Each structure stands twice: as structure tokens, then as C-alpha cells.
Image 1 (cartoon, helix red, strand yellow):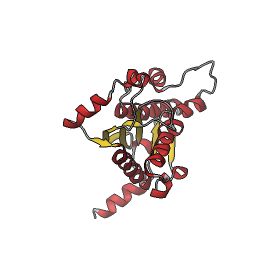
Image 2 (spheres, helix red, strand yellow):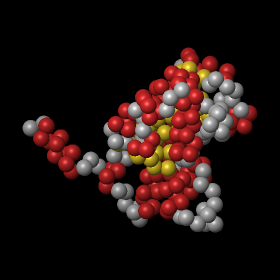
Image 3 (cartoon, one colour):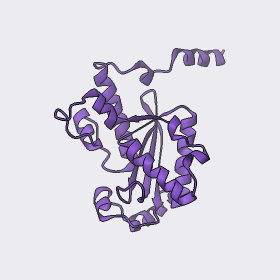
Image 4 (cartoon, helix red, strand yellow):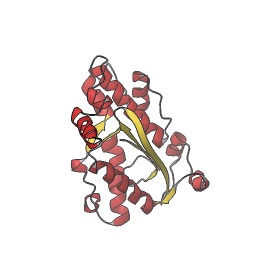
Length: 210
């Protein structure tokens, strides 16, 4: 499950997500996705707007064509999606996922509802997280060899189409970067579990159709 957000700014303790992107992959292939916007309860900083190109007026104008939520409804829906996939045992894949997107979600939820995410069933300690930046540091720990690790740089390094600071496209890009990292680690052989169902699942499927 790829996950990414675009935000009003960079301070995870005070800023808000203004868009969420989710993309589910199954055996290496995209299966479903969801993308929605949120009207924040604070201004979008000029620096953030230069990156993702969204103003409050742009978000309001998207009501005609896209899903646009209030801050509280957006947080609740994002948590609902994540809780669902956590229940399925999914891995959450992203860039700086733990330190930025998830941390901002945690602080925003507590600020909006005066309770923790864990109180509503989303347990960070049990999330299966793959951060492509951290994964890349394991692959190549030398910062002299690879000094920059942002998603755009990882996309360039691994030959993946960049997401362009769009939450859904960045979520997809992070998953595709991870697949390329796996290929690199396995000398060009994609891990079997990413490309085919486990044998036990195939047998179950066959049994159910007999």
C-alpha cells in the first residue's frame, strides 16, 4: 500500500495534510487507489504552495470533480482506509513515511479529536512500514556515494517516473522505487512473493472451486 500526503507546511506538529493518496498493489501490480483533498484549518504556506501548487481556492474548486473533505472528515477517512489495510496485513510504503506523513497524521488527529490514533484502533507500533529512504540507506549506506535520498532523487536513480508532488502519484512512485530496490538487491530477480500468490493460497483457491 503506497501512501503519501501533500501538506500546508513542514512542521508535523502544527501543519495539516491537504491531500491523501493511497494505492494498493497485489503481487507487484496496482489493484486500486484512492485520492482525496482536505480543506485545512490553517493557511497553506507559500513554500508548500510552490512545491505542490495548491491553494485553498484550488482545493475548494475541486469539489466539482474530486472528493473534498473537512479536516475532521478527512482525518477520519484516512484512518479508516489505513485501519482496513492494516487489518489485511498490508505493508505501507512511502518516502519519509514515519517521520513526516504518519507523524503529521498522529499530531493532527490528536489536535482535532483530543485523543490518540491508537484510541480508535490505528496502532502505529503494529504497522508494517517500508520507508524507501531508509531502505535505500541500507542498500547504499555511504552518503558520499549517494548524498541525496528524497523521493525525486530516488526516482531518478532507479529510473522511476516521479510523482510530481501529487499525493497519489508520489504514493505510486514510492512503491515503484521499492520494487526497483528489490530488483537491485536480488540481482535482477524480483522477489517471488511480490509477483505471485503463495502456493498455499493457490491450493486454497483450487480447493474452493472443486
